[in-house]
Length: 121
Image 1 (cartoon, rainbow, N blue to C red):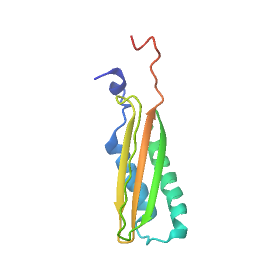
Image 2 (cartoon, rainbow, N blue to C red):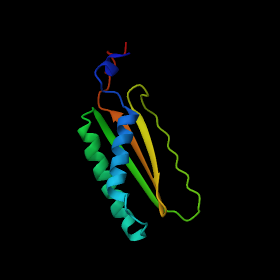
Image 3 (cartoon, rainbow, N blue to C red):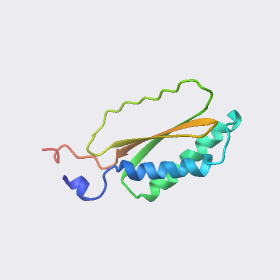
């Protein structure tokens, strides 16, 4: 285990997933899809998620995407790609649905603790 992991600063997918599921639940638990509300719901999920992630008190910058679409039988594909330090940075994708909509939330976490070139030797 490296020094970074010893400090408890690793990207823990399970912790992030719990935060995201809670954010989605608070915003969408009793909602039925209404297209005019999707943007507000997305912003609310992001705000709740950022507050929850901040409470984890981990040294990360986060990028969050939210996709809310009506459930109407059409296909939905979501993909992402990253180029980062896999030992420190991480990604968590949570999918949620009810009878009227699908929601996909992706969190990208990049560590603010970057090794200097002399520490890499």
